[in-house]
Image (cartoon, rainbow, N blue to C red):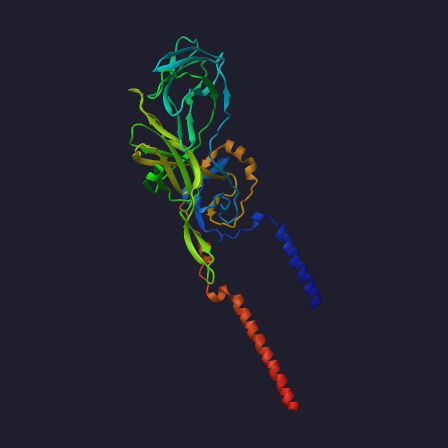
Length: 454
């Protein structure tokens, strides 16, 4: 074959190789795992019959992953990608249906003590709670709810619940809902007991029923690394700083514990992932200056907590939890005391949502989970389209070993000598030097020829 023929054959062979590579499936060759900073071994069950295998993600993975978890990757024994789906267990909120009763009758009252009303829904009607409307501001009132089918005989449905309304710092906090549990009695008898500051007459202005069938989310307790309590007299508040030890935790709720027997307080919850961040400032006539500044807090939730004394033998009526949506490591819980003495905090409990990574039971068994690549795009797998069907066939549980540094990433990020990191600069300087030498040599040659000619 002539040289030109060999060249043409080489070009054709290279073009064919490029075409084959472009046409090959994305998973045909193992990806380069060096950009992922961390890795953990996956221990899957031995040959499950079918369905899905679910792997609960620990806080160590959530903290090292991006907030969207788009940098997670499963790899088989040969380093190939294994498709997966993510599921955050948020429960099922269900659909809330509110409706009015047919009539309110048999209104009775004992001045200065209590008011009652009988509620007729016209037949069996399912409900989980009711809203009880009473007048006034800055009150708390105990509620008794009884139920029956004939409007004459009664059984206790909710012995102690509380209504309250509080105005503070320009905001109103109003609790009129009484949780009853799932029931379908035709008649309810609602009794509202007067609060200590109420007058002679506190009418029950209305009762509205609500049916909400929900499934609570599955949650995981988050160990609290540290808490720090401080008093802020200027704003009449107690601040509790909480460090959960890991970033990007998908929080669900915060529960506070106090030694005090009776209280009603407004609470705010703020959060952030980091306490400090580094900023670069431009300085006139000099180099830029870097310094650390506080990361601002983000508002997560606001509400009220309470503990009220109950009649003997009924236990304590309290609500000390706040729903806290958001992903963060640090919490600032601010309890507004008003003119009351600060409460005595005895504990803080935090729960997060459970996050699971699932893959098909019949397929390539994953051996490793890679995490920690800010530049990775979120993957898209066909498994997401039929994962629910597989989940109905059954779920097996997998476990995850300790998260460690990816040795490939460590090798890639080794310290490179200055000469290797700036090879382009060195070559540029060398070329400039060679160009200058060439100019000098050329000038010297012309000068020599001119001297020789003269």
